[in-house]
Length: 343
Ligand code: NAD
Ligand code: TYD
Image 1 (cartoon, rainbow, N blue to C red):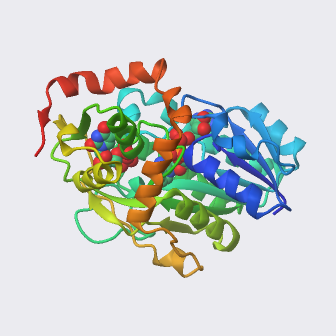
Image 2 (spheres, protein in one colour):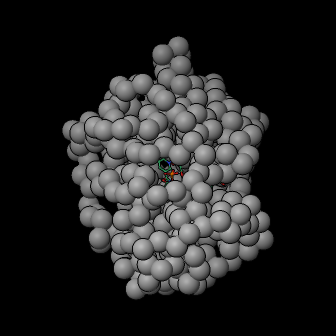
């Protein structure tokens, strides 16, 4: 590996990966390709802007001409694909962009990568492809049962990756991360939305009874998991990156409010998300066998996250304007109007 194309790295996890790779591997050239959708933000990459081994290109992964030009221009030998529409609620409101990026975009990247003769292609995927699991832990060989348009599009992207590995012998690896949190996460996902709303003493819209279960993974652990899979993963294999920290949503919200020093009276129970998966939980032993180890425990990671949003209002206040407010109104206005207080 020498010249690595990291797509979608103006977003939350991709930018953390790009910052980490630029610092950790000064002998690699890191080229970020990102469309800069509503979720893409050059501020996330400010800290590496002046680094010699980093370049930025604004393009759509589904734009064949642009992808081909970038692969040639930088003589790319490795692709790590983070680019995606990533929010379940938006996939319910407007699924088109999900199919465009998470399925067609992945196909274009693979197809151009094949033509260009790249080495490794790592696809960043999600535990949501397994769907709702009532008990136990999802392992990599489990069948896919995606329930949201987001999860279905990510599953479709994974299947394209599989087909290029089997049919064309491409060197591919897939990672499936669990619910990730930390600095620079767009404030539409549970934790950054609720932290920033709670800072302003605004109501927190918990879907349904709040007894849904997610497995919470700190972004830095997700990034090192991808690094391990990229360098040591076996071609054609998928690896779960699990936080092994499953919790009820309502407990996550309580812990966040305690870390922030805000009252539980901010919580509102609102009508549930359509098709809402009750539980995700994965087994991480396959990745651990490659040498990955989590570094962050939940209380420390949650406090670091809360503190980051408290100390970086410059980053999130300017996001919570314009299109964001329209989305917020569409998603929450009616729900909050018919909400009930908790506790
Ligand atoms: P994000 O929404 O914060 O960022 C997505 C990035 O992709 C943005 O910078 C956006 O501009 C870019 N993008 C979108 N469409 C594009 C296109 N057509 N061409 C080029 N760039 C495009 O997402 P995230 O939370 O950082 O997630 C990154 C990846 O990790 C996604 O593939 C997601 O499915 C996966 N994942 C996320 C989580 C999580 O909890 N956030 C968990 C597991 C897996
Ligand atoms: P989210 O951060 O959207 O991630 P995902 O849907 O990929 O798991 O949501 C995490 C959990 O929090 C999920 O069960 C839905 C719930 N949730 C709420 O209760 N209220 C909200 O406003 C949001 C955004 C999420």
